[in-house]
Length: 202
Image 1 (cartoon, rainbow, N blue to C red):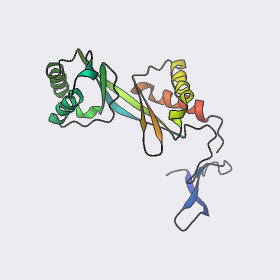
Image 2: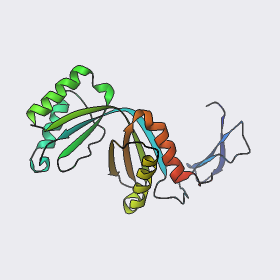
Image 3: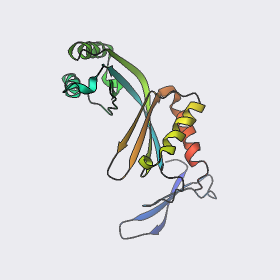
Image 4: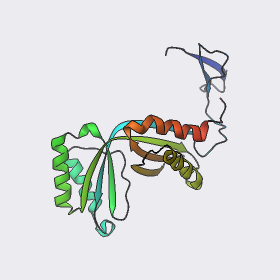
């Protein structure tokens, strides 16, 4: 990696090495310390990442939540097309499938919309392309509604529309996922980073 020097700072145990990443062009700067713990005072958000080239399949049907087997039937249609999904946010009358958009050419997209509309009697089926996913990761996010409000507010201030939002809970961490247009990805990441980490020294 050009311009980056990896320096071992200390041994924590037989297997754990604390690492300090520094820029060889600016050796006086403290750099980024990689350890097995963190002392970020701006919890609950401890990490931000993003990825693009997604599409959103939006399926709407009145009282969808009362229809037994709706989700299974929808996923079976995806299986028939050999499609895999990344996220499935849902509501009372709507369900969203997030897929890597390189799986869908125009022919598959047209057939997919037709089958979902016909077989599930959906009121509306649309596909939105060029979506980027921005993920905020932290261990206490579900106990702190303020972090969600802060992230949404800075996106609104930058006039970045939120196409999708979902919260996932793993074994030890919570992730909050925003879907935005791919052309807004870098601005969105920068805005959220400045909101949560601008005052954090490294």
